[in-house]
Image (cartoon, rainbow, N blue to C red; front, side, top):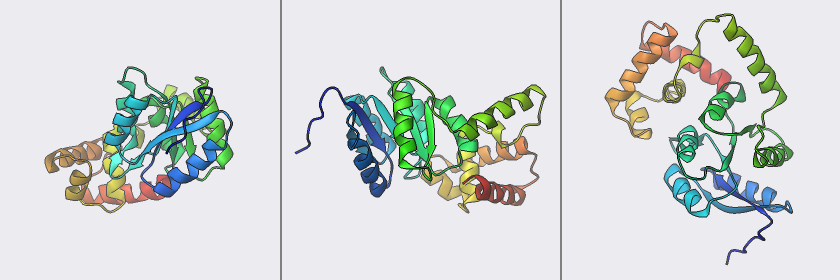
Length: 221
């Protein structure tokens, strides 16, 4: 039988498709005197239902969830009556994904290669309503802002979240049909996104698109 946490403890919900990761996070968080893991899920649908039912104070979300997008989950949680504070814990490069996660509604971003202490520090920050990102990302964001004021040329940053997800999967070697199945889209929709990506990045054909996507995945995950 699950032990009920004291009311003084902040309730945390975990969303990750790897059971070992969830187990490790639960042990880490439950060791803290003021934090308690109240539930967990491995996919978007289950997470949405359980989070709305349990109403946790904060949610830790991975960006890759069994072929689904953690960014989509973050956005959908913002539409609920009481959105929880959200901390992203991901293997993906924060230099690119942190900004998108924050725009979607997250309050913090921690990479999985960081120490466990960063996760707890991030949780405490977002629970107090503050942003939590690394110093490196904060500096990069400031530099990007200055460059944008100078009219820097559009790059992969110009792609939408859905286009980025497709671009990443192309770089991982996935064919359009598999991408469509994984993201629950029609093949024509994926092909239309590919056409938009090529136009935005100035790529001549599908071969160049794949080459650039592979290169990007090598640098950003």
